[in-house]
Length: 375
Image 1 (cartoon, helix red, strand yellow):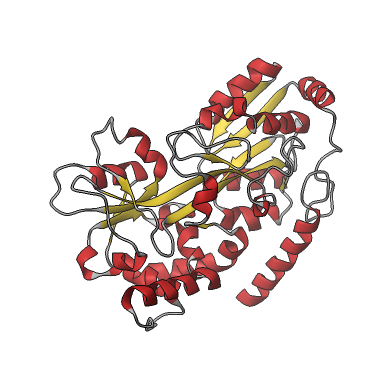
Image 2: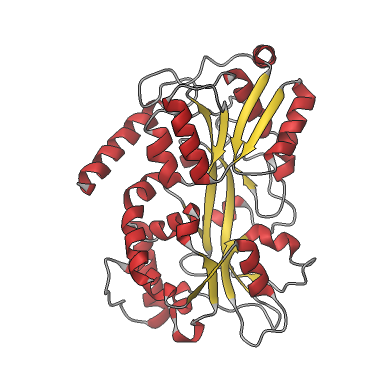
């Protein structure tokens, strides 16, 4: 049954990928967006609509929306929602054809893909001003608007961390010294663990094990990805939030060096909170993961032109300004990362696992069941 679903999902994505982007067709064959208007005409059409409703994952959207209103005179209603709340709300409203959100910024590809994309509840749209300027072509469909890294970070009060291989975290010496948020409480964390079980990353993990220990990994599970999860979770302490984990790991005066997997934006406040935190760079085969926030127009948008205009605005330096902080990256080539970030998005692509929504949608339930068995 699962294999049939996986094949069906892949065939639908192939069909969608051929017709899903700007000015084409969605999975149901309906027109995704109207023909692109010249900018002046788009502004006029958006102002004629007069209002815009946005659902978002980030509180900073409100600040960007205020700048948009000041620039174009269009009133914006912003609602911040958790991933699961947003997906359920958008699905219900689209199914009932209600006037609700015009534009959404959302996370958790394992649910976004089957529940919003395959159903035709959202429409992929990239403004003509940035088409061809997205850093990675794979991020055009579905459209990745923002990227945020979660990294292995250690207490560095007594010196920089020297860990070079993720398998070291599974050794007995690290028991109780690793913290991350329970993946059942945050979809992007579960997507990361789902990704390491795919063919590409499980092979990289097997190779990393061999490089570290000079021998082949003996499996007690499906592959090296599952094996690493099993051994890592035996050493892990769950934290309530990335903020709390950063504070626990970075607290000064500890006898034992602690490690965490949390968002790099927690480094912004490390100095103010008197924390000692150091990123583990160049770890084999990954230093952590980066997860996307997707942007979509909705099927039932009452202000589609205002939504298109806002999305265009959000991908300018002016519109991106509220997000121009350490640990947040735009997918647009011309919008450079915050000067406090020593790594660019191009650098992180070489070191971090990235979410594939199709794989996560197909395999996550298996990984969830496996992790449940470890508790």
